[in-house]
Image (cartoon, rainbow, N blue to C red):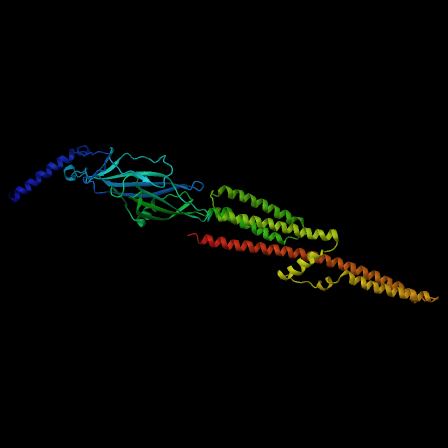
Length: 453
């Protein structure tokens, strides 16, 4: 055929193709529907490759008591039906179409699923290409089991996984493969992920695994999600008020001990802290393992109660002095002599005076009394007592009374000072122990929370 004849033939063929494409439709494509109950392969020894893809859209909820995570995602799986094909050139260039039909599809099984009441939106259409590839896309609502750990609440990070695989077909019949790797899935998911303000998506890991079950090997694809709780709200609404109340309770230790306002103020703080614990009970998820925040609040509560008991103890020491007029021996030996060195308490100048015992004062009075008796005896031996001797006798008696009054007043002041010193030592001991417990606990909590990742 001459070149002119070839050009004429191609022009006529193109003309008829254009006329044909103007009048063709999807109904003109003849699909070879096979038995929907059997795997659509021409050679039964060739496994069907099922490619899956999952995009996490939102984390609906995490149930700590049931150890479940509810998620919403976009899922698609793709496989090939070897009995379906058509020539796009003979069908106006149609390479794919959306069709609602009854075809064979892999038995998709989510191994972590615990709620089989599927409320996902159904998509009845398949995407079928000219080479027999079939894609099934749908939204997927999953209630899956997940081992949750709230020890670091509200700075906790949860790692959950969803695995897709076949329940019936082993690896010789169906092989599951991911459509994209971990980096591509994470990049794609960040564009679709809609957080409710509670969680932040930090990582996605996609892996393929072949596991052995009852002597047969099965193929699965794992999507492991790492989500982190948004903790700023909990810090502002709960953790900071807890520290403010603890700081106020420490500062209240500087209120004068003999005032009833200190005890009332500390009791009011404990009542306010109890309200915070009730709020914590409402916001804290249920779990077998208590969270570190709950342990921290319980220790703070116990420390505040101990400080109240210490304030009651100091009040008891002061009231005991007012009732008895002296300081018990055990207070002197234990609190004044031992705690003062232990707590580096500054010793006051009245220490030497405090060492005077009552029997020393009585010896001095006996000596004075003997002197008076000698004066009286000598005076009785003389008939004529001079005026000077009488005045001396009266003077000695007055001096003795004044001395006794001074000693009694000094001993009373010393006992009061000793009582006040003992109360101050108890106060300082409680304050040091209080600050030590809160400081160590704060450092421990900070270290644990900083190492959560």
